[in-house]
Image (cartoon, rainbow, N blue to C red; front, side, top):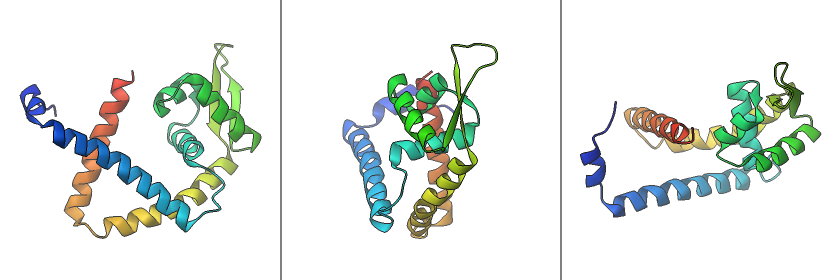
Length: 155
């Protein structure tokens, strides 16, 4: 379902600024609450995101991983190196193209991801309990649409 350009143009700059600020603020507050609840988590935000993406995508080329993360290849390589040193991801060569590196999550990485996301899941559960079920469903539908649109913009 597409939105008409006229409708998009009619949204005020103030509302668009508020949307952007709310997204950033929610993210920062959510992370801060998770850190406060579990300050000893062994995986920080960017590294956790790599594990989450690899868990969802399976074996992934490093270039595709960088695109999915929205960061440059050197930053992705640095994250992969540190996660590989801890045994949380595995790098391998592409059988068809030696220039390509494939990254995948290890069993230990999956366990680490599960353990690290448990506090986030509990916080999200507490947050969502303050909303009506219909509002939660609507919010998730909208977020999925926005994530897909942002991912498409990066292609």
